Amino acid sequence: MEATTLSYTNLHNHGELFANFFRARHETFISRKRWDLPQVDGMEFDQYDTAASRWVAVHDRGQILAGVRLIPTTHQVGIYSYMIRDAQRGLLPSIPSHLLYEEAPIASHIWECSRIFVSEHVPAQQRMSVHSQLIREMVVSARHLGASKVLGLIPAVAVRGGRRVGLECVPTGPVLDIDGAHVCVEISLATKLH
Image (tube, rainbow, N blue to C red):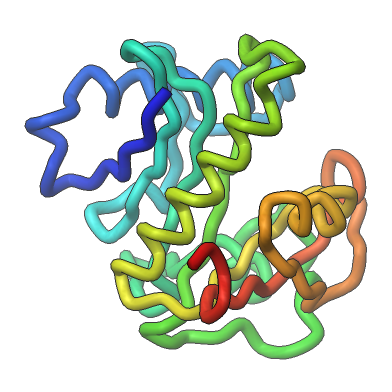
């Protein structure tokens, strides 16, 4: 099992892995969860999958085991910036606009994590180690990109689960019913995963 952070700049080194990442997202979010998302050729993507994004993949022999997307909070393409901010601005009708207690930040040291998943094909006894590897690589990548904080909209039950993988997820908004209970959290990277 290994972890790779994918970007447009290293796509030529990881072409099939990059495509498999989006296929795994399709399987997770469209096939299994039945979310209404853009898709083509069995791959899921949206307006936040831009050249500014990074995709962290945990994989084994080309099979994607888990993944997460990182987006800078400073990036903007057309009317879109990042998911949490755009939801707060009323641009994403599937996510309530009152998801944060304060205005969504725009800062070079804050990145958003979204579309986090662990494949349903990962056996139960391996899920924790796969998830831990994903979080470790996400933290390393985010730090490398200059982030000291990460924002995310995660299942409410994952707030306590974050501690098991060394993260303190501090709620920054109310618990909302978005295909189950979800909450926005802020994760400080300053002291994590030495």
